[in-house]
Image (cartoon, rainbow, N blue to C red; front, side):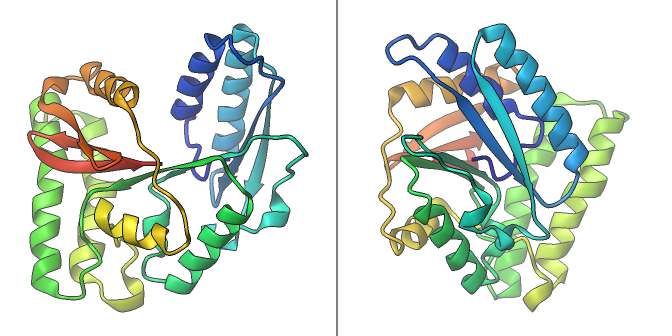
Length: 253
């Protein structure tokens, strides 16, 4: 179950790993992709994944679940058959509900009741939920300095992709964190220690991401320009990705 499938990069990596796994034969890889907008993009992603699955000889199906808001997800939307092994991928999703604790609790309980064998959570490694303005301002300045620095090292200033990303996503995030208050603030990222405390309350047990996970994570930035400035570190049982030593993302299971 993918709470934000987007272009399906994570599913592609999963398929490639399953294709070389011979110990347990795979009967069916069923992906349920949830989304709030851009259903056509999800459908296009499903078609590309189906083609890849066919080329890898992996039985595959994809179901799209559209909701008005991610908090509207409920157990009845998922068709789980007896004997199916359930996994959940939550990339940069839970933080959008930090400002709505009742909704966050309801979503986590729904996901837990689906009885997954593992839930993988990726979030920005930043503290943007502080009610004190100066602390939020300082944290936003420190955090957003890393992606701006990455673009400066890796892309020309005239690059239209860079301009679009900086002008849309970055500017929207900075404005929301710094200038908005109360219910209008949707960017409320938390650091890995805070997520540990949050998820532990629901009796979810952190699972160790071993050396193999660390090795695979380190391969990703090596494919990018200036990727040698990206490093991955262990943080307890989890991982963090850093740009020139500054934490950017956390990955936990």
